[in-house]
Length: 329
Image (cartoon, rainbow, N blue to C red; front, side, top):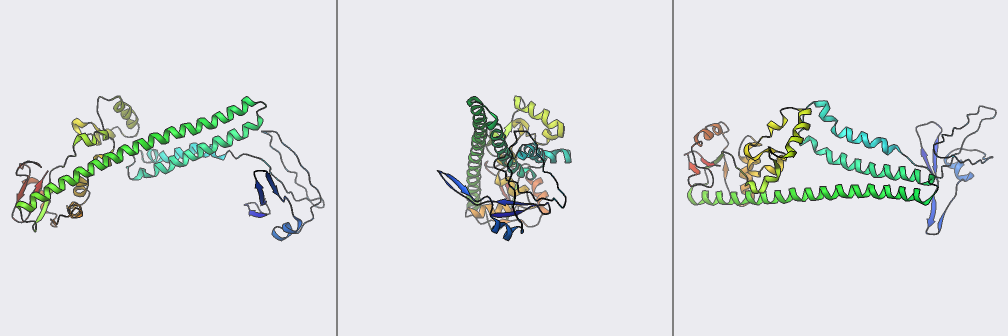
């Protein structure tokens, strides 16, 4: 017998050790010796049993001395429906940051959403199991029990469809990310080959302009303005921030709806930091030794100087400026 303490003083839960197999089970519901060792010394003199129908709330009589009694209650069957209450709370909590801040949540801050959605899915299944498990005993015919089983099967089917959809979506994004990475490596190898062939790579290198991933790779990260999806997104986004979609406007490509898949490691290595040091590290990862320009004050001047330069991969996209080399995208 396992004794579980509760928040109520003097109230404990006694959990019997159950021995069972395919034939059934056996457990010791009460032991005077073990009860005295683990709970308190007492004399168990009376044993009553009552059965309450579904929906009946049964109370315990409170008795004062000299006729006081301690109560030993055994629950042989029951259902806990707290999960049905936690389910909407879990989903509301996941999106509460939108309403608290009054603006769109940054995608890095939204990384908790899958955890909440997964937790909500578990609560959903658990709640359905608890609810149907409670209603099934009430069913006086086979049809009622079949309905309960059907509800369970439907819940599992809904989650299976959602899971399949998520797996397909994640597979698509990982595939895009792989193609995007391969394109970045190909670009880095070509630039390094041109630098090593025609320039002194001991000089610092600065990268200017904008590197564009081939649209054929990342087109799934954009929604066109003529798409019905865009108007649905806009109606929803306007509830939070009327200017939200404008922040992700990418010209003729449409609206940027998936930031990370639409970004190249080349862009990230340049704009996420104050220098090109991270991009130079990416070159080093692939066997090319370059030197990053450490004087940050020269970056703005280099951008101005490169405005009229051809863009990669056109002839002349690399220029030696004496103290440093410009590579222009």
